[in-house]
Image 1 (cartoon, rainbow, N blue to C red):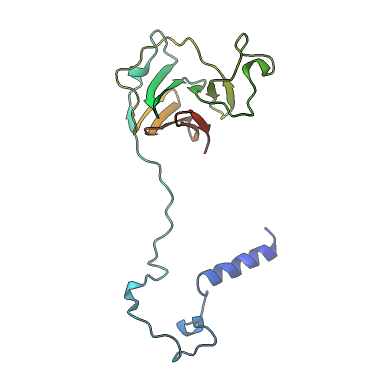
Image 2 (image 1 turned 180 degrees about the vertical axis):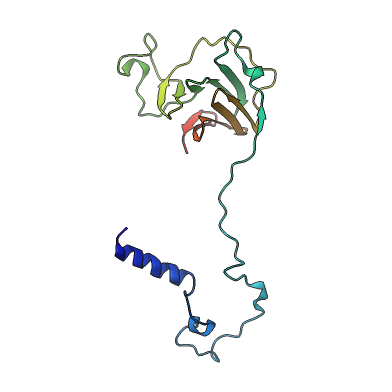
Length: 198
């Protein structure tokens, strides 16, 4: 930021705070003298700068962390699978320490499986049906198929979170799921399973 910009910001800040210094009379418009200034009503109801509430930032809702045990895949110690109905469709996510895979609709700029460099998904063709999210935040689009697991008696519910080997998924409401590693995350939402990142 150059010096001129800093000075402009400093001036705007002073003006925004209704004057940086001076007495109460100094803040009255120059064309008004104290006797011409409108009579003030009881000022005890008007918050002063120190009483004005500070801006609040949106806080993350608290989640009930549930055991990963009901989501374990028979015969696998490295993965858990979540199948939970949200927004009128089943949401499926597979969690491991290597990545998180969730059913999601690929954006239009993602190529078809057969058009991906090196054809990593051959012999499959068509649109990718899953987002694959790595611990470093890398995103790959592909498919997840043939995962043998039993749907848990109780799927992950709104307000719940499950953690497994550094990966996590949580359900903020009845129409979306958020998953990630640490602070890196993504969201799948709505009946079309729309993918987004914060």
